[in-house]
Length: 484
Image (cartoon, rainbow, N blue to C red; front, side, top):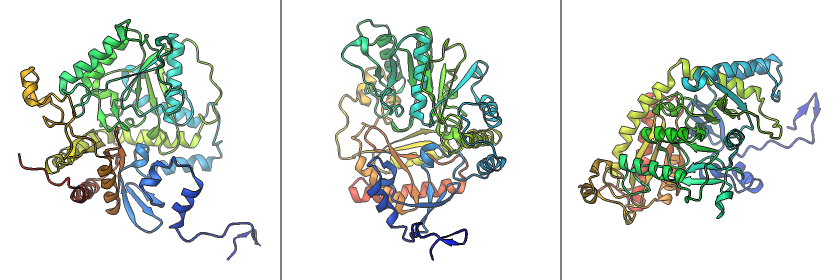
Protein backbone atom coordinates (compact mmCIF):
# COMPACT_ATOMS: atom_id res chain seq x y z
CA UNK A 1 0.00 0.00 0.00
CA UNK A 2 1.05 3.58 -0.63
CA UNK A 3 1.73 5.68 2.49
CA UNK A 4 -1.25 7.80 3.58
CA UNK A 5 -0.92 11.34 4.95
CA UNK A 6 -4.09 12.92 6.31
CA UNK A 7 -6.26 10.49 4.36
CA UNK A 8 -4.50 11.26 1.07
CA UNK A 9 -2.30 8.76 -0.69
CA UNK A 10 1.26 10.13 -0.81
CA UNK A 11 2.66 9.18 -4.22
CA UNK A 12 5.95 11.02 -3.53
CA UNK A 13 6.99 8.94 -0.52
CA UNK A 14 9.50 6.18 -1.27
CA UNK A 15 8.20 2.64 -1.08
CA UNK A 16 9.33 0.82 2.07
CA UNK A 17 12.36 -1.42 1.64
CA UNK A 18 11.78 -4.83 3.13
CA UNK A 19 15.14 -6.36 2.23
CA UNK A 20 17.64 -5.48 5.00
CA UNK A 21 20.47 -7.16 3.13
CA UNK A 22 20.40 -4.29 0.63
CA UNK A 23 21.07 -1.61 3.25
CA UNK A 24 24.87 -2.16 3.56
CA UNK A 25 25.15 -2.24 -0.25
CA UNK A 26 23.33 1.09 -0.54
CA UNK A 27 25.46 2.53 2.25
CA UNK A 28 28.65 1.54 0.43
CA UNK A 29 27.35 3.18 -2.76
CA UNK A 30 26.40 6.47 -1.11
CA UNK A 31 28.80 7.05 1.79
CA UNK A 32 32.52 7.76 1.87
CA UNK A 33 35.27 5.22 2.46
CA UNK A 34 35.57 6.51 6.04
CA UNK A 35 33.10 3.84 7.20
CA UNK A 36 35.55 2.17 9.59
CA UNK A 37 33.14 0.11 11.66
CA UNK A 38 30.65 -0.64 8.90
CA UNK A 39 33.27 -2.41 6.79
CA UNK A 40 34.41 -4.66 9.63
CA UNK A 41 30.95 -5.22 11.12
CA UNK A 42 28.44 -5.69 8.27
CA UNK A 43 25.33 -5.76 10.43
CA UNK A 44 22.22 -3.56 10.39
CA UNK A 45 21.16 -2.82 13.98
CA UNK A 46 17.43 -2.31 14.42
CA UNK A 47 16.93 -2.77 18.17
CA UNK A 48 19.23 -2.65 21.17
CA UNK A 49 19.03 -2.90 24.95
CA UNK A 50 21.88 -3.09 27.43
CA UNK A 51 24.61 -5.33 26.06
CA UNK A 52 22.45 -6.74 23.27
CA UNK A 53 21.97 -5.59 19.68
CA UNK A 54 19.47 -7.18 17.30
CA UNK A 55 20.23 -6.99 13.60
CA UNK A 56 17.73 -6.62 10.77
CA UNK A 57 18.29 -10.30 10.00
CA UNK A 58 17.02 -11.26 13.45
CA UNK A 59 20.42 -12.25 14.85
CA UNK A 60 21.40 -11.04 18.31
CA UNK A 61 24.87 -9.87 19.33
CA UNK A 62 26.64 -9.08 22.57
CA UNK A 63 28.05 -5.59 22.00
CA UNK A 64 31.49 -5.13 23.57
CA UNK A 65 32.25 -2.11 21.42
CA UNK A 66 29.65 0.09 23.16
CA UNK A 67 29.85 2.88 20.62
CA UNK A 68 33.64 3.09 21.12
CA UNK A 69 33.02 3.49 24.86
CA UNK A 70 30.18 5.99 24.46
CA UNK A 71 27.54 3.72 26.03
CA UNK A 72 28.56 3.55 29.69
CA UNK A 73 25.14 2.11 30.59
CA UNK A 74 24.70 0.12 27.41
CA UNK A 75 22.02 0.66 24.79
CA UNK A 76 18.78 2.46 25.69
CA UNK A 77 19.14 2.29 29.45
CA UNK A 78 15.82 3.19 31.15
CA UNK A 79 17.24 6.14 33.12
CA UNK A 80 18.70 7.64 29.94
CA UNK A 81 15.48 7.16 27.96
CA UNK A 82 13.43 8.70 30.77
CA UNK A 83 15.72 11.73 30.93
CA UNK A 84 15.39 12.26 27.16
CA UNK A 85 11.60 11.82 27.23
CA UNK A 86 11.30 14.34 30.06
CA UNK A 87 13.02 17.01 27.99
CA UNK A 88 11.02 16.14 24.86
CA UNK A 89 7.71 16.27 26.75
CA UNK A 90 8.57 19.51 28.57
CA UNK A 91 8.60 21.67 25.46
CA UNK A 92 12.11 22.90 26.30
CA UNK A 93 14.30 23.99 23.38
CA UNK A 94 16.47 21.19 22.05
CA UNK A 95 19.23 23.59 21.07
CA UNK A 96 19.88 26.62 23.26
CA UNK A 97 23.31 27.60 21.91
CA UNK A 98 25.32 28.60 25.00
CA UNK A 99 22.40 30.07 26.96
CA UNK A 100 21.78 29.02 30.56
CA UNK A 101 18.99 26.44 30.92
CA UNK A 102 17.71 24.27 33.78
CA UNK A 103 18.91 21.19 31.88
CA UNK A 104 22.45 22.55 31.58
CA UNK A 105 22.43 23.65 35.23
CA UNK A 106 21.51 20.13 36.36
CA UNK A 107 24.22 18.65 34.14
CA UNK A 108 26.88 20.92 35.62
CA UNK A 109 25.73 20.13 39.17
CA UNK A 110 26.17 16.41 38.55
CA UNK A 111 29.46 16.84 36.69
CA UNK A 112 30.97 18.86 39.54
CA UNK A 113 29.92 16.16 42.02
CA UNK A 114 32.09 13.64 40.19
CA UNK A 115 35.22 15.69 39.41
CA UNK A 116 38.50 14.87 41.19
CA UNK A 117 38.45 16.78 44.52
CA UNK A 118 41.61 18.71 43.70
CA UNK A 119 39.98 20.13 40.58
CA UNK A 120 36.29 20.42 41.52
CA UNK A 121 36.80 23.34 43.91
CA UNK A 122 38.45 25.56 41.31
CA UNK A 123 37.04 24.31 38.02
CA UNK A 124 35.32 25.96 35.11
CA UNK A 125 33.67 24.20 32.18
CA UNK A 126 33.94 25.11 28.51
CA UNK A 127 31.36 23.64 26.13
CA UNK A 128 32.54 23.09 22.58
CA UNK A 129 31.68 21.10 19.48
CA UNK A 130 30.44 17.58 20.26
CA UNK A 131 33.49 15.51 19.30
CA UNK A 132 36.56 14.54 21.26
CA UNK A 133 38.85 16.07 18.65
CA UNK A 134 37.11 19.43 18.97
CA UNK A 135 37.46 19.21 22.75
CA UNK A 136 41.21 18.62 22.39
CA UNK A 137 41.45 21.61 20.07
CA UNK A 138 39.60 23.73 22.63
CA UNK A 139 41.82 22.59 25.49
CA UNK A 140 44.94 23.38 23.50
CA UNK A 141 43.55 26.84 22.67
CA UNK A 142 42.94 27.48 26.37
CA UNK A 143 46.51 26.46 27.19
CA UNK A 144 47.92 28.70 24.46
CA UNK A 145 45.95 31.66 25.79
CA UNK A 146 47.15 31.00 29.32
CA UNK A 147 50.84 30.51 28.55
CA UNK A 148 51.46 32.56 25.43
CA UNK A 149 53.21 29.50 23.99
CA UNK A 150 52.10 27.42 21.01
CA UNK A 151 53.51 23.90 21.16
CA UNK A 152 51.96 20.67 22.44
CA UNK A 153 53.62 17.60 23.93
CA UNK A 154 51.77 14.41 23.04
CA UNK A 155 52.69 10.71 23.09
CA UNK A 156 53.18 7.99 20.53
CA UNK A 157 50.00 6.00 20.08
CA UNK A 158 47.73 8.85 21.15
CA UNK A 159 44.26 8.34 19.73
CA UNK A 160 42.85 11.87 19.92
CA UNK A 161 43.17 14.98 17.86
CA UNK A 162 42.17 14.01 14.34
CA UNK A 163 41.40 17.58 13.33
CA UNK A 164 43.89 19.60 11.33
CA UNK A 165 45.22 21.69 14.21
CA UNK A 166 46.07 18.79 16.49
CA UNK A 167 47.70 16.82 13.70
CA UNK A 168 49.86 19.77 12.69
CA UNK A 169 53.27 18.05 12.72
CA UNK A 170 56.55 19.61 13.88
CA UNK A 171 58.56 21.28 11.15
CA UNK A 172 62.34 21.20 10.82
CA UNK A 173 62.46 24.69 12.32
CA UNK A 174 62.23 24.30 16.09
CA UNK A 175 60.58 27.70 16.48
CA UNK A 176 57.67 26.50 14.33
CA UNK A 177 57.22 23.16 16.15
CA UNK A 178 53.61 22.42 17.02
CA UNK A 179 53.30 18.82 18.26
CA UNK A 180 56.21 16.83 19.71
CA UNK A 181 55.65 13.09 20.16
CA UNK A 182 57.22 11.40 23.18
CA UNK A 183 57.58 7.69 24.08
CA UNK A 184 54.63 6.29 26.01
CA UNK A 185 55.78 3.65 28.53
CA UNK A 186 54.51 0.10 28.22
CA UNK A 187 55.73 -3.39 28.98
CA UNK A 188 55.18 -5.61 25.97
CA UNK A 189 56.44 -3.15 23.34
CA UNK A 190 58.57 -0.94 25.56
CA UNK A 191 60.19 1.71 23.33
CA UNK A 192 63.46 1.10 25.20
CA UNK A 193 63.29 -2.71 25.15
CA UNK A 194 63.18 -3.19 28.91
CA UNK A 195 59.67 -2.54 30.29
CA UNK A 196 58.71 -2.35 33.95
CA UNK A 197 59.92 0.41 36.27
CA UNK A 198 63.17 0.68 34.34
CA UNK A 199 61.23 1.49 31.15
CA UNK A 200 59.05 3.95 33.08
CA UNK A 201 62.14 5.72 34.38
CA UNK A 202 63.70 5.94 30.92
CA UNK A 203 60.48 7.38 29.41
CA UNK A 204 60.30 10.02 32.15
CA UNK A 205 63.99 10.91 31.76
CA UNK A 206 63.52 11.27 27.99
CA UNK A 207 60.68 13.74 28.58
CA UNK A 208 62.67 15.69 31.16
CA UNK A 209 65.65 15.89 28.83
CA UNK A 210 63.53 17.12 25.94
CA UNK A 211 62.01 19.87 28.11
CA UNK A 212 65.28 21.06 29.61
CA UNK A 213 67.77 20.58 26.78
CA UNK A 214 68.00 23.77 24.71
CA UNK A 215 69.29 21.64 21.84
CA UNK A 216 66.29 19.29 21.81
CA UNK A 217 64.62 21.31 19.06
CA UNK A 218 61.39 21.55 21.08
CA UNK A 219 60.68 24.85 22.87
CA UNK A 220 58.73 24.89 26.11
CA UNK A 221 55.18 23.95 25.05
CA UNK A 222 51.78 25.37 25.85
CA UNK A 223 50.64 22.05 27.32
CA UNK A 224 51.16 18.31 27.64
CA UNK A 225 48.32 16.02 26.50
CA UNK A 226 48.17 12.48 27.90
CA UNK A 227 45.68 9.59 28.03
CA UNK A 228 45.62 7.71 31.37
CA UNK A 229 44.89 4.62 29.29
CA UNK A 230 45.59 4.74 25.56
CA UNK A 231 42.44 3.40 23.93
CA UNK A 232 42.91 3.48 20.18
CA UNK A 233 46.65 3.06 20.79
CA UNK A 234 46.01 -0.50 21.92
CA UNK A 235 44.50 -0.31 25.44
CA UNK A 236 47.75 0.59 27.21
CA UNK A 237 47.42 1.83 30.81
CA UNK A 238 49.85 4.56 31.82
CA UNK A 239 51.88 3.47 34.86
CA UNK A 240 50.70 5.49 37.86
CA UNK A 241 54.27 6.34 38.87
CA UNK A 242 54.99 7.71 35.39
CA UNK A 243 51.84 9.82 35.35
CA UNK A 244 52.83 11.29 38.71
CA UNK A 245 56.24 12.17 37.28
CA UNK A 246 54.61 13.82 34.27
CA UNK A 247 52.53 15.89 36.69
CA UNK A 248 55.64 16.95 38.60
CA UNK A 249 57.64 17.71 35.45
CA UNK A 250 54.89 19.90 34.02
CA UNK A 251 54.10 21.64 37.31
CA UNK A 252 57.77 22.52 37.87
CA UNK A 253 57.92 24.14 34.42
CA UNK A 254 54.47 25.81 34.44
CA UNK A 255 53.26 23.59 31.60
CA UNK A 256 49.52 22.82 31.91
CA UNK A 257 48.74 19.10 32.03
CA UNK A 258 45.74 18.13 29.85
CA UNK A 259 44.31 14.69 30.60
CA UNK A 260 42.26 13.03 27.86
CA UNK A 261 39.36 11.22 29.55
CA UNK A 262 37.31 10.90 26.37
CA UNK A 263 37.25 7.10 26.40
CA UNK A 264 38.43 6.41 29.95
CA UNK A 265 35.97 8.61 31.84
CA UNK A 266 32.70 7.91 33.70
CA UNK A 267 33.79 4.76 35.54
CA UNK A 268 35.25 2.86 32.59
CA UNK A 269 38.63 2.02 34.20
CA UNK A 270 37.45 1.28 37.74
CA UNK A 271 37.64 4.89 38.98
CA UNK A 272 35.20 7.60 37.97
CA UNK A 273 38.05 9.32 36.12
CA UNK A 274 41.07 7.25 35.14
CA UNK A 275 43.52 9.92 36.28
CA UNK A 276 42.34 9.29 39.86
CA UNK A 277 44.17 5.94 39.94
CA UNK A 278 47.45 7.86 40.13
CA UNK A 279 46.28 10.56 42.53
CA UNK A 280 47.17 13.22 39.96
CA UNK A 281 45.17 16.44 39.68
CA UNK A 282 45.39 17.75 36.10
CA UNK A 283 45.03 21.36 35.02
CA UNK A 284 42.59 20.43 32.25
CA UNK A 285 40.33 17.44 31.57
CA UNK A 286 38.91 16.71 28.12
CA UNK A 287 35.58 14.84 28.25
CA UNK A 288 33.34 13.35 25.57
CA UNK A 289 31.87 9.93 24.63
CA UNK A 290 30.08 8.66 27.76
CA UNK A 291 29.65 12.20 29.13
CA UNK A 292 26.65 12.64 26.81
CA UNK A 293 24.92 9.43 27.86
CA UNK A 294 25.13 8.06 24.26
CA UNK A 295 24.41 11.42 22.56
CA UNK A 296 27.02 13.83 21.13
CA UNK A 297 28.52 16.08 23.81
CA UNK A 298 32.02 17.27 24.71
CA UNK A 299 33.28 19.58 27.44
CA UNK A 300 36.61 20.88 28.70
CA UNK A 301 37.11 21.23 32.46
CA UNK A 302 39.96 23.49 33.54
CA UNK A 303 41.39 25.31 36.56
CA UNK A 304 39.76 28.71 36.91
CA UNK A 305 43.14 30.45 37.30
CA UNK A 306 44.51 28.92 34.09
CA UNK A 307 43.04 31.41 31.65
CA UNK A 308 43.15 35.16 32.04
CA UNK A 309 41.32 35.75 28.77
CA UNK A 310 39.03 33.43 26.86
CA UNK A 311 40.54 32.75 23.43
CA UNK A 312 38.53 34.18 20.58
CA UNK A 313 36.95 31.33 18.65
CA UNK A 314 34.06 31.13 16.19
CA UNK A 315 30.70 30.53 17.83
CA UNK A 316 29.69 26.88 17.80
CA UNK A 317 26.10 25.88 17.07
CA UNK A 318 26.02 22.73 19.18
CA UNK A 319 27.30 23.32 22.73
CA UNK A 320 23.72 23.59 23.98
CA UNK A 321 22.46 20.09 23.10
CA UNK A 322 19.75 19.73 25.74
CA UNK A 323 19.03 16.05 25.07
CA UNK A 324 22.70 15.14 25.43
CA UNK A 325 23.01 17.08 28.67
CA UNK A 326 19.93 15.39 30.11
CA UNK A 327 21.18 11.96 29.06
CA UNK A 328 24.62 12.81 30.44
CA UNK A 329 23.21 13.91 33.79
CA UNK A 330 21.27 10.65 34.11
CA UNK A 331 24.34 8.60 33.19
CA UNK A 332 26.70 10.39 35.58
CA UNK A 333 24.20 10.09 38.44
CA UNK A 334 23.48 6.41 37.79
CA UNK A 335 27.16 5.49 37.67
CA UNK A 336 27.84 7.44 40.87
CA UNK A 337 24.82 6.28 42.85
CA UNK A 338 25.24 2.61 41.93
CA UNK A 339 29.03 2.46 42.40
CA UNK A 340 29.49 1.22 38.84
CA UNK A 341 33.12 2.35 38.77
CA UNK A 342 33.89 0.04 41.68
CA UNK A 343 31.97 -2.73 39.93
CA UNK A 344 34.07 -2.14 36.79
CA UNK A 345 37.26 -2.47 38.85
CA UNK A 346 36.20 -5.80 40.38
CA UNK A 347 34.76 -7.38 37.25
CA UNK A 348 37.55 -6.02 35.06
CA UNK A 349 40.24 -7.57 37.27
CA UNK A 350 38.46 -10.92 37.05
CA UNK A 351 38.10 -10.72 33.27
CA UNK A 352 41.77 -9.77 32.86
CA UNK A 353 42.85 -12.72 34.98
CA UNK A 354 40.72 -15.15 32.98
CA UNK A 355 41.72 -13.68 29.63
CA UNK A 356 45.41 -13.90 30.50
CA UNK A 357 45.05 -17.66 30.27
CA UNK A 358 44.74 -17.08 26.52
CA UNK A 359 48.29 -15.73 26.50
CA UNK A 360 49.50 -18.99 28.07
CA UNK A 361 47.32 -21.23 25.91
CA UNK A 362 47.92 -19.60 22.53
CA UNK A 363 51.24 -18.52 21.06
CA UNK A 364 49.41 -15.94 18.92
CA UNK A 365 48.32 -13.94 22.00
CA UNK A 366 51.17 -11.63 22.86
CA UNK A 367 49.64 -9.84 25.82
CA UNK A 368 46.35 -9.20 27.60
CA UNK A 369 46.15 -5.84 29.35
CA UNK A 370 43.80 -3.13 30.47
CA UNK A 371 42.17 -1.45 33.42
CA UNK A 372 38.63 -1.97 34.64
CA UNK A 373 36.28 -2.67 31.73
CA UNK A 374 38.75 -1.42 29.14
CA UNK A 375 40.64 -4.50 27.96
CA UNK A 376 42.90 -5.30 25.03
CA UNK A 377 44.13 -8.64 23.65
CA UNK A 378 47.16 -8.19 21.39
CA UNK A 379 47.52 -10.73 18.57
CA UNK A 380 51.00 -11.52 17.27
CA UNK A 381 52.72 -13.69 14.68
CA UNK A 382 54.16 -16.65 16.63
CA UNK A 383 56.45 -17.54 13.72
CA UNK A 384 57.91 -14.06 13.39
CA UNK A 385 61.19 -12.84 14.80
CA UNK A 386 61.12 -10.90 18.05
CA UNK A 387 61.62 -7.17 17.97
CA UNK A 388 65.26 -6.04 17.81
CA UNK A 389 66.73 -4.46 20.90
CA UNK A 390 64.76 -6.59 23.36
CA UNK A 391 67.06 -7.02 26.32
CA UNK A 392 65.90 -10.54 27.20
CA UNK A 393 65.88 -12.17 30.62
CA UNK A 394 69.56 -13.16 30.79
CA UNK A 395 70.84 -9.84 29.48
CA UNK A 396 68.47 -7.95 31.78
CA UNK A 397 69.76 -9.86 34.78
CA UNK A 398 73.30 -8.88 33.84
CA UNK A 399 72.18 -5.26 33.64
CA UNK A 400 70.60 -5.51 37.08
CA UNK A 401 67.03 -5.38 35.76
CA UNK A 402 64.65 -7.93 37.25
CA UNK A 403 63.30 -10.48 34.78
CA UNK A 404 59.79 -9.81 36.12
CA UNK A 405 59.78 -6.41 34.45
CA UNK A 406 60.70 -7.65 31.00
CA UNK A 407 58.19 -7.06 28.19
CA UNK A 408 55.50 -9.74 28.13
CA UNK A 409 56.81 -11.22 31.40
CA UNK A 410 60.11 -12.10 29.82
CA UNK A 411 58.70 -13.14 26.43
CA UNK A 412 60.24 -11.55 23.37
CA UNK A 413 57.65 -9.21 21.78
CA UNK A 414 56.62 -10.71 18.47
CA UNK A 415 55.44 -8.85 15.35
CA UNK A 416 51.86 -7.61 15.38
CA UNK A 417 49.36 -9.73 13.46
CA UNK A 418 46.62 -7.40 12.16
CA UNK A 419 45.22 -10.02 9.78
CA UNK A 420 44.87 -12.48 12.66
CA UNK A 421 43.21 -9.80 14.81
CA UNK A 422 40.75 -9.10 11.99
CA UNK A 423 40.09 -12.84 11.71
CA UNK A 424 39.38 -13.00 15.45
CA UNK A 425 36.97 -10.08 15.09
CA UNK A 426 35.13 -11.91 12.31
CA UNK A 427 35.05 -15.18 14.26
CA UNK A 428 33.60 -13.23 17.19
CA UNK A 429 30.93 -11.78 14.91
CA UNK A 430 29.99 -15.28 13.71
CA UNK A 431 29.50 -16.22 17.36
CA UNK A 432 27.36 -13.18 18.09
CA UNK A 433 30.02 -11.01 19.74
CA UNK A 434 30.98 -7.49 18.63
CA UNK A 435 34.51 -6.35 19.47
CA UNK A 436 36.71 -3.51 18.25
CA UNK A 437 40.25 -3.38 16.87
CA UNK A 438 42.99 -0.92 17.77
CA UNK A 439 46.70 -0.60 18.38
CA UNK A 440 49.58 0.57 16.23
CA UNK A 441 48.87 -2.01 13.52
CA UNK A 442 45.20 -2.72 14.36
CA UNK A 443 46.43 -5.90 16.00
CA UNK A 444 44.66 -5.49 19.35
CA UNK A 445 41.15 -6.83 20.00
CA UNK A 446 39.36 -4.31 22.24
CA UNK A 447 36.67 -5.07 24.81
CA UNK A 448 34.61 -2.11 26.05
CA UNK A 449 31.46 -3.68 27.54
CA UNK A 450 28.96 -1.38 29.28
CA UNK A 451 29.42 -0.92 33.02
CA UNK A 452 26.08 -2.66 33.50
CA UNK A 453 27.29 -6.01 32.10
CA UNK A 454 26.23 -8.90 34.34
CA UNK A 455 28.43 -11.78 35.52
CA UNK A 456 26.53 -14.16 33.25
CA UNK A 457 26.98 -11.90 30.24
CA UNK A 458 30.68 -11.47 31.03
CA UNK A 459 31.09 -15.25 31.10
CA UNK A 460 29.39 -15.51 27.70
CA UNK A 461 31.71 -12.84 26.29
CA UNK A 462 34.76 -14.75 27.54
CA UNK A 463 33.55 -18.04 26.09
CA UNK A 464 32.84 -16.55 22.67
CA UNK A 465 36.12 -14.64 22.53
CA UNK A 466 38.20 -17.67 23.55
CA UNK A 467 36.41 -19.81 20.98
CA UNK A 468 37.01 -17.14 18.31
CA UNK A 469 40.73 -16.96 19.10
CA UNK A 470 40.94 -20.74 18.98
CA UNK A 471 39.21 -20.88 15.59
CA UNK A 472 41.27 -18.07 14.05
CA UNK A 473 44.54 -19.46 15.40
CA UNK A 474 43.77 -22.93 14.09
CA UNK A 475 43.20 -21.55 10.59
CA UNK A 476 46.39 -19.50 10.65
CA UNK A 477 48.79 -21.74 12.49
CA UNK A 478 48.88 -19.78 15.72
CA UNK A 479 47.42 -22.51 17.91
CA UNK A 480 48.20 -23.61 21.45
CA UNK A 481 51.55 -22.47 22.80
CA UNK A 482 54.31 -25.05 23.07
CA UNK A 483 55.05 -26.36 26.53
CA UNK A 484 58.01 -24.58 28.17
